[in-house]
Image (tube, rainbow, N blue to C red; front, top):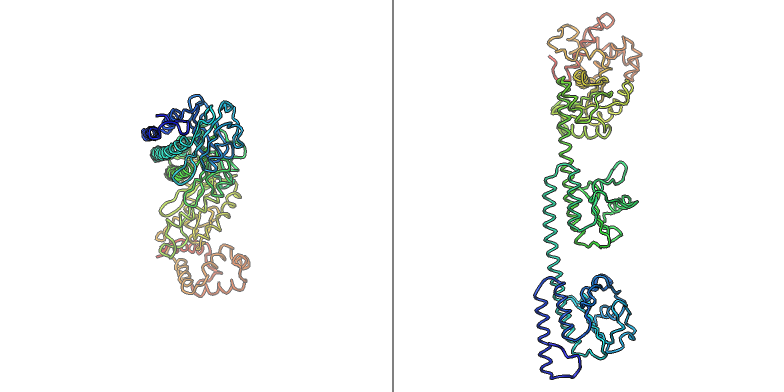
Length: 583
C-alpha cells in the first residue's frame, strides 16, 4: 500500500491500485471518527507509510499564523507549540499562494525555506507541501512531508498528497462543525442551567455569585466580574466576582465605563470580553470576562450578551423583591406607630434601618382638590409625588395608602428652623403636583409617634382649607385651627356668627370674591387694616371696601361684634366647607 517514491518505477496499473488503496485507507480514517486529533494522527501515519517519508506535519491556519496540529511521533512534542507566520518559510508560501509545491533536493538552499532547529531540517533534503482547502476556497492549513534522500518525491506523491489534503479538509470542516455543535449544545445547556439558577435567586448578592460563576464556566474564562453603575458618582463599582479574590488592574473601571457608554461588547484586548447590563433604557452596569492568552470570538460575545440580558432581568426582579419587602417592613412600622405599639414599632424600625431616636418629623400628604375634579387618580398622583419627594429626601421613609402618603423625614437638628427648611423645600413640589403636605412637630423615639402622626394628618386636613391649590403646612403655625379640626359642625353653636360666615362663603362662590379670606386676615391682625393690606398685597382702601361689603352681606357691625367668636366660627366653617361638610 506504498506509493512508490521513484518516478516511473513499477507497473503503472499496480501503482494506481496501490494509490487507490491508500486513498481508501485515508477515507476510512477520515470517516471513522469525529475526533479531529484522532483523524489527523491517522492521516499522518498513512501519509508517512504510503510515501516512505521520514516526517509528516499538519499545520492549521489560526489568524495570520500556522500552528502545528499533528506530526510524526518524533516531533509530536512540538504540537501546539510550533508556529509559522503566513509569510514565513515554504509552509507559509503554500498557505499564502494556495499552491502545492515540492523541493526535490537541497531544501535549505531554497530562498523560501526558513530554518527551524526543532525540526532538524539540516537532516532533510526533499520537501513537499500542499494546502488544505475549505469548500469556500479558504485555506484551512498545510500538509508537509520531509525526507532525507534527495529526489525522493515525484508528481505521484504530490498528487496523492493533494487528494489526502482534500479529504483532510472535509474531516477538518466536519470536526469543526461537530465541535461547534457540541459547544453550542453545552453552552445552551449551561445557559439553561444558569437561567434556572437566576430564576430561583431573590437576593442580589446570590445573583452576583450565580452569574459570575455560571458565565465563567460558560465561556471558559479565567475570571468574571459584575460592575454596577453609580449614577450619582458616574462610576462603576465592583459588585461580584468569580473567583472572589480576582483583582482588577488599575483603571479597569474607567475603561469599562467608557466601553459601556460606547455600547461596545469587546474591549481593546482580545482577552477581555464585556457586555452591558441594561433593562430597557436603564443602564445597570456591565459584565466582563477575562481569559489570559485566549481570544474571544463572536459566539462568545453573543453568549455573554445573553447572560447579561438575563442578569439585568434578574437584577430588576431582585431589586423589586427587595423594595417590596422593604415597603412591607416600613408599612408595618407605620401601622405600629399609628397604633401606639412602641415595641413593635421599634422592632420594625430596626429592620427598616430607621433610627427613631434621631430628630424627625412626620409628613402626611393628600390631594389638594376635592375628589371628583379633573386630573390623575390618586394612585398615579401619589406615586409621582412620592417619587419626586424621594429624590428631594432620599433618607426619608414612605408609606403610600389609598388616600394619603405618609413619611418620616430625619432632621439634622431638632430646631424649628430645620422643620421650616424642610417645609419650604417641599412647598414648590406640593404646589406643582396639587398636593397638600402636613408637617408634625419635631419628634424623638416611638412613644409620642402616634400623636405626631395625628398632627401631620391634621395639618394636611387644615391645609386643604388654607392652600386650595396645594402647598406645605406646618402644624406649629396653624393657630386656632388646631383646636377646631376635630370639632364637628353639628357640635358647634348654630348662632348668627355661623350663619354670617355661611353667607360669606356662598357670596364668594357666586361672585368669585375674596371676602372670607379678607375677614380672616383682618381678624388675625387684630383689626389692623394696614397689617391686613400688607399680608394680602392689596391697598388699605381695598381692605376697607371689602370690610364694608362684608357688613352689608352679613348685617354685622365689625366694630361692635365679638371678634373671637366670629373668628372661631369662620375657621370652623372653612375647615368643613372644603370637604363639602357644611350644613
